[in-house]
Image (cartoon, rainbow, N blue to C red; front, side, top):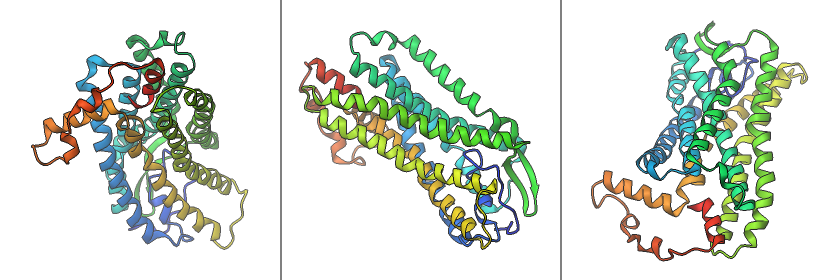
Length: 355
């Protein structure tokens, strides 16, 4: 790959983190070969798995749109956000392998803003689903007034508008630039204010706020669930803990990297022997790969774990795939899912998580 003499850009974050030229071209970096091979491989896997998983969610919800509720609306939009996030990866995989951006200014701008909107949209819809679960569990009798189709549409429009607003810098400042190794697609703001804004958006809106919402809501939900008379309650508690731990473990390392990289570029750290620079670039490769994998997991954390949704997925697959090619469990009688048609109030509330 060309571009060995390029300096590392200080404008780094969710808008710019998939540029391998930012990771492997510094004279200080000793992880170039690893990065060139590793990140494009991860991008391809993330794209394929995200396309399959989130695509199935979208198809199932579209097919059963007449039975849509607020949970389904949020699942649908979460899947769309993850798809929007992942669909930019083939472009940047090509960019990483070739070593030069060949798609022009318009595609560069679209890819950056799509990437940013997809990320923030995914995070914001996760927060909406968390708050909805909080209201359903803690205030089941008084909090259901907003769970209508009209309210769901209004929430959807609001979340996508907020995601676009937060991502506007990517739309305004992304462009193709001429570098020593060729053309690059960069997020290149005109002053340092937008670098600081980006760091704030990435870490506060993209990590700290959703973690606070999940921790606050689930810390109240779990004790309530434990007191309910439902055989599924401990399964739900495990799912809640898995959701929180997964989000924290997959995104926190990359956000820590962003803060350290920002501080280095601001001159807080002095790196005379390239040790810090090399370590940060290797950390970038590893933490980006870990963070991007999260969009592949959302369908399993929020959709496929539900018995009703899983049944719908199997029905859809049976209509697409010839008989005999699916595993045996896909043809098991659906009677097991209908054995209990009468549920207590506790079971109905619990099923909000795994319906």
